[in-house]
Structures are given as C-alpha cells and as structure tokens.
Amino acid sequence: MESKKYLFNEEIPLENIEKGIKRKMLGYNNDLMMVKIYFEKGTVGARHIHPHTQTSYVEKGKFEVSIGDETKVLYEGDGFFVPPNVEHRVKALKPGILLDVFNPCREEFLNHSAL
Amino acid sequence: MESKKYLFNEEIPLENIEKGIKRKMLGYNNDLMMVKIYFEKGTVGARHIHPHTQTSYVEKGKFEVSIGDETKVLYEGDGFFVPPNVEHRVKALKPGILLDVFNPCREEFLNHSAL
Image 1 (cartoon, one colour):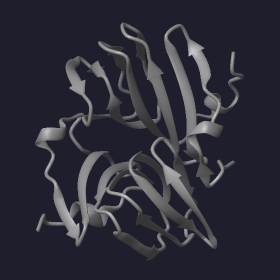
Image 2 (cartoon, rainbow over the protein chains, first blue to last red; image 1 turned 180 degrees about the vertical axis):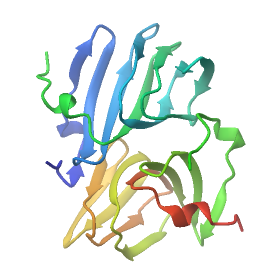
Image 3 (cartoon, rainbow over the protein chains, first blue to last red; image 1 turned 90 degrees about the vertical axis):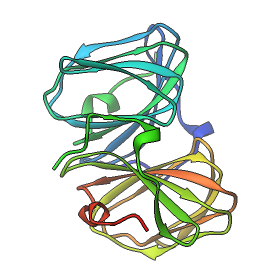
C-alpha cells in the first residue's frame, strides 16, 4: 500500500471528516502516513488514543493541545509529539491547519469515503 | 529516544547543515522523525538514497523534486513520497521550506552539532 510519489494540492480530495474538520491525505505507505487537517475555529479533535506514534506541525492557526494530563497553546511553526497509547486532544482557537504524521499508517483513514 | 512533547518554534535551534540549508528538529522517537528544512534559492539537496521511508510537504517556496528517474515541480501545499531505497534530490527554485518526515528516525540527525 503506497500513495503516489507526487501529491499535488489541487488534485487531492478535501474530505469532510466531521463538523468543522476536513482532511487531505498526503504521502503514505504502511509505515508512515502524512495527513493535512483543516479546522474551523472552535473545533475540537476529541480526546482519543491510538497505538500509533504521532508527530504534528502547526501550519496555520492557534491550537490548544493536550497530551496526557498536560495542555499547552501552540502557534504557527510549533509542533507536538504523541507517543503511542497516550491520550491527546486538540482545540482550534482560530481557524487552523495541522500536519499530522503517523507510524504505522492509519489504515482506517484510507477507507473513508468523502462525505 | 524521544523528543519533547511540545516543540516551540522559538526554542528549537536552527542548525546550519550545509551552504544554503538550515534545519529545525521537530517531534521524533525511534520510529518517526519530523524535520523542518529551510532552503535558500538555488540550493540543491544532492541526489541521495536511504533505507528510510520519507513523506514530505512543501510549506513554502517552489521545488524541483526528483524521485527515481522522474522530476516534477512542486509548490506550496504539495507533497511527495519517497519509498525506502529510492534515490531522490530536491532543488529550491525559490527560497523555501520543506517538512520531511522519516520512518524510522534518522539517528545521524541527532548527532549533528549546530555549526
């Protein structure tokens, strides 16, 4: 399982994930997956947990990010790291974009049909 | 081996890697590593190969990207994917920023002393 080698922004479907959250899939294989996530202001990515390692980057906006029992506010250019099996949550304090990258890939993301 | 959970842009050292290329380390563990790379116009990331999977995102600029024997021009918001052991090269056609993510981590990046 592997994405295309070149991923052109205009060609990538913008998937509606839930109210206030949209997603574009970037490069991936079984081991690694990059996902661009668009948040409307006030949207919460609910507290959740997964066995995947996650490393993320704030491309735009301002996010309140909770990892385990700690919460910080992050701005453009900041990043965060979520070890496997650690609960985390994000809240968009402004309209924003996160780049989330996972190891291994989130297979369930590939089965999502755009709404 | 694991990075901090919160990575604040202003606190991350900007490392001089080679002429025209600087780097900031974002979140990582042994399995996953995110790196932000700043290119001056005209700079080439020489053709190279590694066993790591790589997924990358063009945050700013315009890059000529070669993967194997194919070359394309990528703009802000585009991405590319490099399977393990496939030669690749980038050239910054404008000043630019790439987010490169690797599986597993590039251990040698952690031993680099900022110049």
